[in-house]
Length: 469
Ligand code: NDP
Figure (cartoon, rainbow, N blue to C red):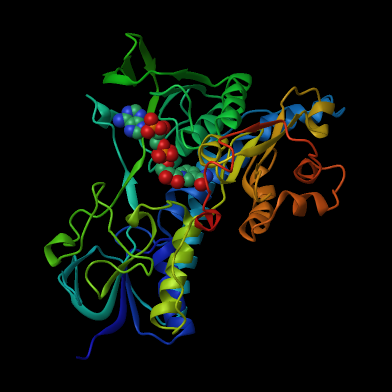
């Protein structure tokens, strides 16, 4: 059978564009790609990129305050012009979107700025009715914000809209305790908004190491984020120009904006997947094997739509591995068990790889190394903010099972620790490295004595170390 394309990709985000470009540019595949919104997808247009720029922008007052601590006694932050920042951000996103589109075109890929859905295992149809056949179809449509299902929630916003607000809210409510709520709490507080964050549980950032999270909670309190635990909104109503929120504890309060950051769901509805036999999981995610192949042999899926590790670099790697495997003849499975990530908070970020203390202690006996200290830079300017560096080491094998850093630019540090841990570094390997002094990261290689030993003795449970990698 002759197909219009070797590969048709649905979704122009991180995973889809990487798969398309490598397939076309490196391996000569004939590729088409459809994107219903803007090329670049969530990360570039309404996620990581604008968020990180907002983090930088919102941290300026703290930097000015630090400058005063270094003797720049007249340093003043002045007024923040949100419309100017927002419009500049929009221009930057336009530039990136164009770069993504041009990258596709330059690689010889046909770009269709249309919604697409599946007709059969080899055919897609665009929203204008055009149909194309392809030997393989890759679904890389990502996810969409999930709403909690409370009365009046449509009056709230999601992270999709937060970059394009008409004006900076004087008072904002963030709902949720994950990456997005935590990062936007930091951002809006930094920009000067009165910031309230409500989380339904007793510890935000549920899947992170609890000890480190307690430092995050303290940091919110220190910078003036009003974090309320074990509370949820129950009713959202219009209140003049603002929004009135009733909470589960009976409190009623007015806000200028309410942002729901209550997770994301795979964006699989209306794609025609189940109609042609592609199996979906309970959260609407596409079920794939380690080769990103779905239950229909010609259809593959990568990125947040498979709802495994919902991070941009994972989607990019899966897209690249797909191209190498299918068109490059080099079989590269997707096994993402040691993935580092960072939550962009200020002044200190949270970055992590591997097991938390709680999980590691359930699997065997571990030595916990913790160093908590006031970094030289902020201490000098008068800040009490503490950094924490934590290593979890398997007593039996000396392998470093987890690394957690709460500190300035923790994400930058964690990237290098991830290389070592990915190579199965032991604590002795860390100790062998000579410190770079004076840095925060030197704590990673100078912690000599464990703070505590926890977990079940290794003799009782044989930990399957290989399963971690
Ligand atoms: P997360 O899954 O991180 O957090 C969702 C939060 O919403 C949790 O605290 C959850 O509570 C809470 N929640 C869920 N449902 C409800 C409900 N019905 N009522 C009240 N609270 C609720 O999702 P985010 O939206 O923060 O982020 C989405 C994805 O984006 C993440 O998977 C993340 O990987 C990615 N991301 C990554 C970033 C990074 O790498 N820096 C930055 C931003 C996003 P509970 O814990 O109790 O379930």
